[in-house]
Image 1: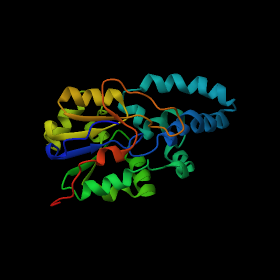
Image 2: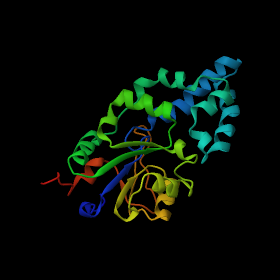
Image 3: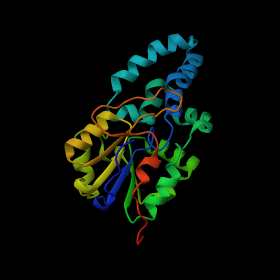
Amino acid sequence: MTSPLPWQQIDTVFLDMDGTLLDLHFDNRFWLEHVPLRFAEKHGLSVEEARERLFPKFRAREGTLEWYCVDYWSRELGLDIPALKRELEHLIRVRPHVTAFLEALQHSGKRVALLTNAHHKVLELKMTTTGLDRHFDHLICAHAFRCPKEDPRFWPRLAEQDPFDPARTLFVDDSLPVLEAARDFGVRHLRAITRPDSQAPPRTPSGFPAIDSFRELMRGLAWRGG
């Protein structure tokens, strides 16, 4: 368990979506199983043959904005990616204690924003499914800045458009490259996630304090005026 956050020194809270607030099992199942299945059906391939064609394409776009763009993959693969995501909509799950944490943040007087690489169509689907959007002051999509959060250009662009003090900001994300970019920009309070996918083994992220449950972050989080 990580040590309590100095909440009196934090004004802004940025929270990632997939693998942080939401169980990454949906996304892993979608890209590793569902897309290969539908691609195989379309082209008369086995699922393993489909994976052999698809996975090099996926790896080639990792760390770029295209990797997160459903419009790009719809064009690239000849599949309606948003429609395929809706086929697995029932697997979208909020991670334990997230809602309680967001409610506590709402009453704490902190500024709270969702900060995601997800395409706006995916963001809309997941917010409609979970209703989490009501807990945020802002929903910020990296596509608006033309680069993903792991790109060092992202953070200055975000700060220019939506000013915040990095020294008084908490950022929680499951991606180590993203956390590294935030740290390099000067974001002081950083937390990683030990189990982004509930169906996968836990991990020990190196270089950052990590949490298994958002309940760990609620210690010392006082309600405004309380």
